[in-house]
Image (cartoon, rainbow, N blue to C red; front, side, top):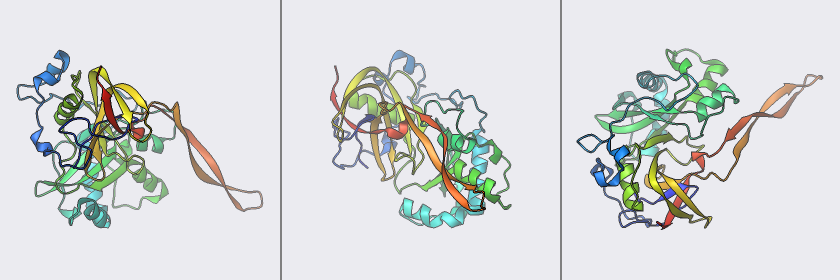
Length: 320
């Protein structure tokens, strides 16, 4: 794994001795489980326990829509795998790099709440798209105590609580499952996700800034996003970053830290240059007067920006 500094709308290059961009392996993420007191402001320090770890609650970021609980999400993920997991064992194994047997997987550790990659999720879009692009619980599944698979359960998918995965779903049920669930194997040797403490410690070390609050987990949705999840880390003052591909410099006080599918940890900034994403367009069938079918585009809704889906790696240029 190689780490690099990124900011919303950025690209990659080396930024600090311990964050090389040339593929040099980083220290094991397990080695960064606490935050040095000097890396945080007084406000963030108040959220650190005596062991150097953030005292976080499982409460969700404010949302106008009802959400399922962490326990409900874990139950949904396990029930889904018990019924349908064997169909995806080859995908899990390819992602992980070794054989995965879904029938042996059990939930391990508390489910993690990841905020929506959109801020905020508009209420004008159809329900299934809102579920897809909304917040999600990241449910970790282990075999013998070793992480193997992560299942993302849309937090707005409350209709899945008590859902019978053994019953025929029909088109509406299939659409709900597709909108609500995502899954992937965790590469061998990767501890997923990085901890809030690691994100804070690495961003502070790379920038020379102090972290002002508890990092916030933001979900990605592959293939809609190249990211799995990103920690959003707020700093006490901005740093200037330059996109390696765009060569555009930006000043940002919020940096992102997360995992790409290639098992590479990177930092990023969110690109807020777009007024909106969308309209989100799909197609629908209508019946013509003569009885024939015609395909027409359907606008489902506009998605606002800034969007964490646009995050890309960056290089730190100056730290005024």
